[in-house]
Length: 365
Image 1 (spheres, rainbow, N blue to C red):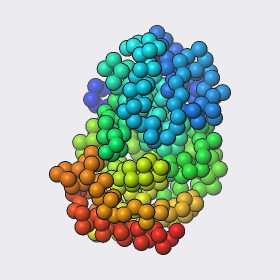
Image 2 (spheres, rainbow, N blue to C red):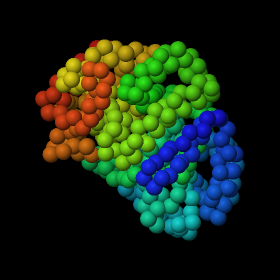
Image 3 (spheres, rainbow, N blue to C red):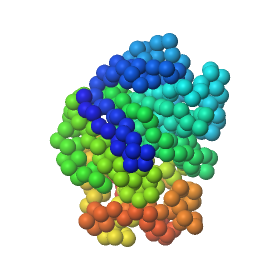
């Protein structure tokens, strides 16, 4: 088991993060120790409930459990409103504690419910997917989608603790595991190139979901994200580096009506960001080969971008949270891998970059 901490200068808070296997009993002890007088509500999805109901039973026995359908479409105003109604109807108040037991959708949605219910109640992240464990559960970003774009409604609201149990990854579907690797690759290309070597050398162990290898991988990614979040909790500057690949990814997800897994969209978005970095700052295009090598190594097929007209992707970018004056702002990289943040990109620059990546992806598929 590995113990990490999120140290936040704002409010001078420290949030415990535990990474390991079989953490449910430890989570129960944490709740008994720190929230014994609180009423516990577990929010999960039906897939997690079906797969891990037995593992969660120690935590959920005699507790309120709310299970919603799985999928990105559940991160909606309607589902948020429904959950608030369910909780209020069950008597939830400021003495309540919410537990987000699921992937990124459950974590984002539950966190936003916690931030807005009675102006804020505590919640705990119990991430069950690779993507949620290495990224979504860390940093305090919570929110829901709007028909005009992803994560347009939200807040920064930190959990009181994060319990990251890699045992949950044993039953994760292959496409969900591959999606989580998208965020892992992001860390490797932006924060620590040594992670690429680890992924190459430990491929077999990671692919067979070896607990020790996963604990190592997940804790390394969390530590990398913490190194950024602790400097810039509210994304005023350096934290935007973690958006590498995400600007185009969010547009693709919206156009696909959220039928494209987030991490796979991030891999496509990273390729667009690499191409733009090359066009604007002479970032080496060899990074594209390294990324595609990792995707091939982990048997992740090329993302079919031909179905996304470049003009439509550009239009979808106009509602991105970071856009200013109708011009999207990208996180890019310079020739020595230094971050270039909030970079304005013109329509001509984007369409050229996107079409270049389309050509390569379609020829490789």
